[in-house]
Amino acid sequence: MFTSYPTEFDTLYALSDLLLMSRHPKPNPAVHEPLPALIERLGQEDPEQRLALVLNGNVFDFGVTPAGLYQDPHEALFTLETMPPTSLEARFLKALANFLSQPNRFLIWITGDRDAALAYPSVQVRLRGLIGLTRDQNARLIFCDDDTGFITKVGGARVLCLHGHEFDHWNAVDQEEIRQRIAAENRGIAVPSATPNPAARLAINLLASMRLKYPWLDLLQPLSRDLIPLLAVLDPTILPKLNSLLDGDAPAETESESTTPRHLHFRYPHCPPNRDRDRVRHLFLEAMEQVRVTRPERSHLDELMRQTEKRLWQGEDPVSLAETADQMLSAGDLSLECELEPLIANENDRLLAARAFLHRLTNGGRSFQLDLGDDQFEKIHMAVDPSIPFVVTGFSQRARALKRPSGSIYFNSGSWREALDLDVSSLDPETFEALWQLLNHVDTGLERLRGQEPLGRPLMRPTRHLICIRADAKGATGWLGEWVAPTKPDANGAEEERAGHFEAVAQSTFRFSIN
Image 1 (cartoon, rainbow, N blue to C red):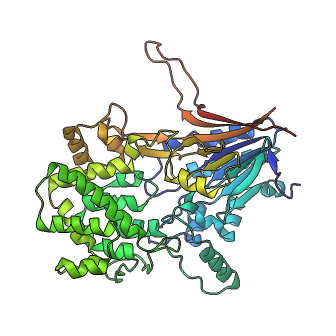
Image 2: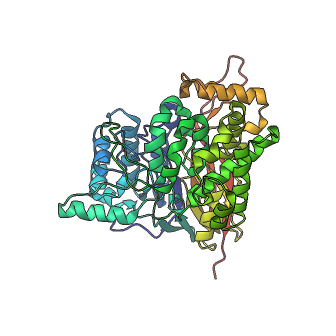
Image 3: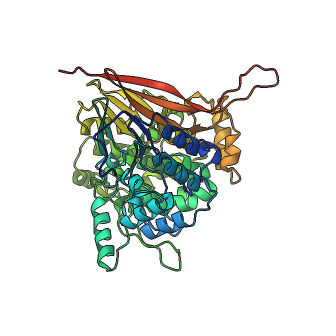
């Protein structure tokens, strides 16, 4: 019987952000359909080789329940125990059992921000029971549930697996709070409710109602403060909520007003004071500058806000601004509602602003560019020893394969879901306006969006990626693969029949010399 996992493997595979059991959006069965067969096929590789499958975070989506509970272990248990036996999730767990039934197979399960409830022992015990493992197989299922990651070797090369939410304060998990809640549960005393992180608060306070009209907002994951300006353009009535939401003192709704539980603190421990507010201001200012290119006239308030913000960003003392402004509004406590009203009061300006915000949220149409550096890559590069040959992450839901300045390799396995494949800069004004009207239409569900091709390709694109790092004679080779759907011959025989498979879209090799 195995009592511990090896310190080195011959092959390591990594998947992340499957987001099974997600309520928003509900998984498209066609996207996840290859998953159980893929896992079983990995288990059938050479039985003499030690093989690790790393589920690198957010396998399930236990984030926020319909009742507004955040990462509640009892809700997670209920969700697991009530899944239909023929569901995709049940077949996924069966595939994991078959994988571990093979010799020399190890399953490394890393928790993310959306399935942090798996850190609770009661949930882990139940999940092991649902998979149905023997004692030996149980020893080869290792949970990494404290945000420290998983470190191992493949072919002599170190490999660090991290989900990535640890470096994003909006989606960070308060591990100390989880520890305290587990301790309270073990001691049989009252367990306090979990404090939602900023992304969860955004989902509870704003998205819960807005996604009913705009279900496509759930395609803009992971949730971040960069989404707030777009929400304000879609629904200006949320403006009065923004100050309190960003400051952490959002007024709790009464029981008669809502069934959502009260949550008192929005600002998370990892969030430096005022950084969120400043970021949202900065995004709006950028959009306002773009709007002014087409609207040269400025109202008195518009000009006042522009000059005040410019002086603030230049570091001028807010007290001196207040003394010289001779205005009712203090520059030290600017109301976002007053700041943003000039931008979204006019329908044409709102259209231009929406285009600017969508451009940012979709990385300027480059979300699927594998070698494009992003914020997560920069943060992890700064936080991880450059001598570690392979760093494997998830979370951002954008597949990446990048070489770090030191020569080591950064992989992001992306996600298994649908994402917006949109480059608004390529759309003429009339086409974008038509698309924006479609996105704003009350009857526009995800099914309708799947049939849209504003750029000659589907607006919604499935993303399914797999990372493989394999030992060879001189070191290790890693590749990022993308799922290629099966094809059948057409009526003219122009296309050959091919089974579904993963095709390497990026490959990197690490070589080392043996002294």
